[in-house]
Amino acid sequence: MVHPAITARGLRKAYGDHAVLDGIDLTVAEGTIFSLLGPNGAGKTTTVQILTTLIGADAGEIRVGGHDASAEVDDVRELIGVTGQFAAVDELLTGRENLELMGALNHLPKKEIRALATELLERFDLVEAGDKPASTYSGGMTRRLDLAMTLVGDPRVIFLDEPTTGLDPRSRRSIWDIIRTLVDDLGVTVFLTTQYLEEADQLADRIAVLDQGRIVAEGTAAELKRLIPGGHIRIDFADHARLDAARSALGSSAQVLEGSDGLTLAVPGDGGVRSLRAVLDVLDAHRIEAGGISVHTPNLDDVFLTLTGKPTTQETVR
Ligand SMILES: Nc1ncnc2c1ncn2[C@@H]1O[C@H](COP(=O)(O)OP(=O)(O)OP(=O)(O)O)[C@@H](O)[C@H]1O
Ligand SMILES: [Mg+2]
View 1 (cartoon, rainbow, N blue to C red):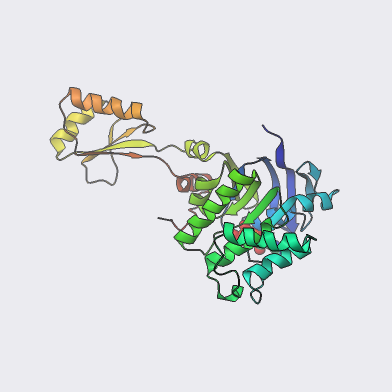
View 2 (cartoon, rainbow, N blue to C red):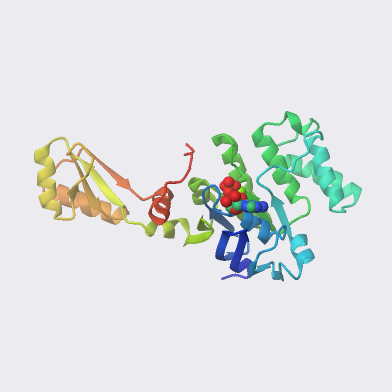
């Protein structure tokens, strides 16, 4: 692996006798997007707070950008930017003033601050709103400003705690585009928490599923999907005669789909071109006409249900 931007080993954190993080290991490669996916109360914010040196862990080792997060706190803080779960925007100030305030807090020269604020307002599509008070901004605009403020210190590693929770699908997509662009253009590393499976699926190079303070699975979206069975090809028929003929032609792996009207066959398979062609070839060879064919691939929702026994609280974005 490339030099990792973040590593954590054996992270533990308890509040009283409640073990919030129960031994967490994470590795995030530089220049990648890593997503910590979990439901309410899983420990996502606690993990971000520890990795960003806001709170200490009870046990464990953390390195960010090669620095030890407990011994070299200042070095870590210099490298990172954090967008918290709740916006850090000052509503009484304009967008530009919020950005300039961040510049001043980062001890940037005045001239540079003005230029940077202008550049960030452009990058985050806030030019027209830049001189209006942030209190007049929509949820999506506030999130964009919050993200822009995170970039002021030119961080190499950016932590985003639920960056799109509560946003409508369109605003969510625009934040996704911004995050992708950050990684592509600036080569930053992004550590992102989310409750949305689709968000992790869309953005993340790697995903860790957090449930009650433990990582219950980790991998690429494709790897996680492979963890669970259930991929199959569905074939619809106009009548039972055709379905029966197809079933004997395709062999014992073809089953009538449960819960269907008895006119759909399910054939286990990954849904790749090869497996589809094999099915079609058999139907052709036996001159059996199919009404329709579709591929069912397991989604991350299925993964979560399989791993934790609970469905997620996901709202689907269409
Ligand atoms: N300062 C605290 N004192 C006591 N308990 C806490 C504290 N901070 C968090 N917790 C508890 O730790 C657990 C995990 O909280 P955390 O905020 O990390 O979850 P989360 O995954 O970010 O949830 P959400 O999706 O709701 O933001 C919760 O049960 C919470 O009540
Ligand atoms: Mg949280």
